Length: 188
Image (cartoon, rainbow, N blue to C red; front, side, top):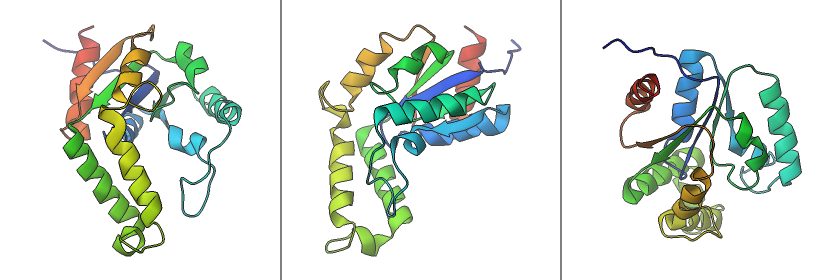
């Protein structure tokens, strides 16, 4: 059976940190011409080192609204559950990526090492505390309750989404995930 390989114009890809949402978002952007937006770029103020100071929710929404309004087609990667709920009516497709916690945490450790270097995040390093706190936060995703960014919170959020939601196990490459997404969208 021949399938149509097109995707909707306004897509939100989210999941736990380290599940691959940014990689899939970038690939969709590259292949289909969507503007790629990442929630981290709107959630965090630019700092050195990064990810230290949050923007106020109304600032995040205003900036995201401007970025989305300037593009006919966009893919937004990362979680905006709670603070970004006013944007839900804009979504034409939501993609939820999930991954075994051990694999996801190993990906995050490797990303942190690449981003900051072993000296910065090791014991006694200048970013040791920030790294430890981030990894503890990320590890709590699968067991945390509704009060934190968690699988439980994401499941409850997805239950209220009016557009189609596609759930995908993210152990495979972004290319494989995109092929599966194309097939699943085409057969809807």
